[in-house]
Amino acid sequence: GAAALWGGRFESGPAAAMAALSLSTHFDWRLAPHDIAGSRAHARVLHRAGLLTSDELVRMLAGLDRLAEDVRTGEFTPAPADEDVHTALERGLIERVGPELGGKLRAGRSRNDQVATLFRMWLRDAARRVAAGALDVVDALVAQAERHPDAVMPGRTHLQHAQPVLLAHHLLAHCQSLLRDVERLRDWDVRAAVSPYGSGALAGSSLGLDPAAVAADLGFAAPVENSIDGTASRDFAAEIAFCLAMLGVNLSRIAEEVIIWTTAEFGYAVLDDAWATGSSIMPQKKNPDVAELARGKSGRLVGNLTGLLATLKAQPLAYNRDLQEDKEPLFDSVEQLDLLLPAMAGMLGTLRFDTARMAALAPAGFTLATDIAEWLVRQGVPFRVAHEAAGACVRVAEARGVGLDELTDAELAECCPHLTPEVRTVLTVEGSIASRNAHGGTAPERVAEQRARLVARAGEH
Ligand code: ARG
Image 1 (cartoon, rainbow, N blue to C red):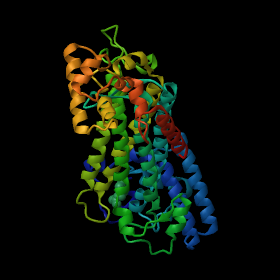
Image 2 (cartoon, protein in one colour):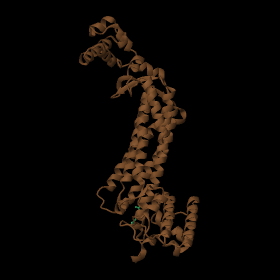
Image 3 (cartoon, rainbow, N blue to C red):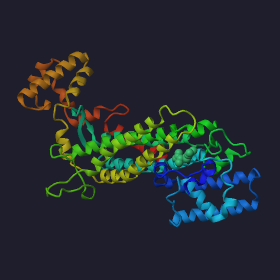
Image 4 (tube, helix red, strand yellow):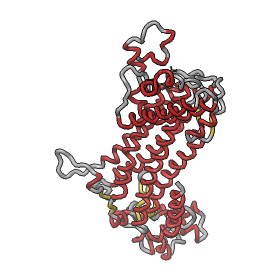
């Protein structure tokens, strides 16, 4: 029954509402393969410490193999009376190897060090999977950048037309933040790759077990330095919750742009049918649901982070049952990203850009005004004066309802005596873009170099 792991000092079993509150198998069952891997490693150190005979070790490992297989096929599942994944699997082991041998595995470990270890193992696997999914989104954006090396668009600040940029430059900006998300997950793993196994309930083990051997067996770099910290700390969970929330937020910023770009007003891009939805009533509709779900789920990922931090706040050392609440938010964040990342890659990879429309809009809103000012600076005019002069050009052009490139020689000279007709060399979108040719700028050759470096960096993962 539910009291299987700790029934000795109790006269009665738990009340029904107590057991219902306590139950976690409906979410922690996914840790079962990791729990069994931990049990194998633990059996080996028990044997090394002389607490299991060689024959017992062989039978124990065979029992664990059978249990793993039965878990995999669904032959073995948690019973209603099993409090958590650890309780259920101990029952399963005892059913397979008998109470005598099965009861020996619990020596020198506690669910407190077990669960902290298994959760790290599960998250390390998840981090690799999420990173791979994020890299697929990067690939989709890089492919679009490669498909459109020369396409231009209005660059924006405050959502207002600012300066023309290359579409590839804009798409690669999103790639930079996504690649940092991937790198952040890798950096996180350095801190997460320590094993709490052997910490026991909090004070460590007295049985001569070797935590370093268990750590190595389970793919960790080292055992934890401090058994209290090993069982009580969850900053590894909060840190990856942040990494996942940040990834969600970055995806939602891309998503928001797709939503805007696909409106009739912008008309920058059209969604592929496979990555859009229709309306049950309005036959003409093509809705950007993937992008909206990205935007919506990012809020959920932020909530999972802040909820976990609130759970951890002010808990005294070492283990408290509150810590059982650490898992669902992380399982949820990973599950949402598992769903979202392939859809985002698909949607972004198949987006069709209307490059002609983007090019037509690139100079709108006087986006070349800065080019006039900077051209004047190159003629030796102080920037303050140049800024005034370019502003005067905008005022004249706006009043006459023309673009900056359509101002007459006389109008230019009136705005500033230094404004000779040569200024027109920078009064094109292409000229403006080509002139921003310092490292990191939007000039085509700089963007091509940036793309090559980014692809090389992404290839390291
Ligand atoms: N299921 C618990 C958790 O997820 C681990 C069990 C520890 N329980 C305890 N009473 N010490 O945190």
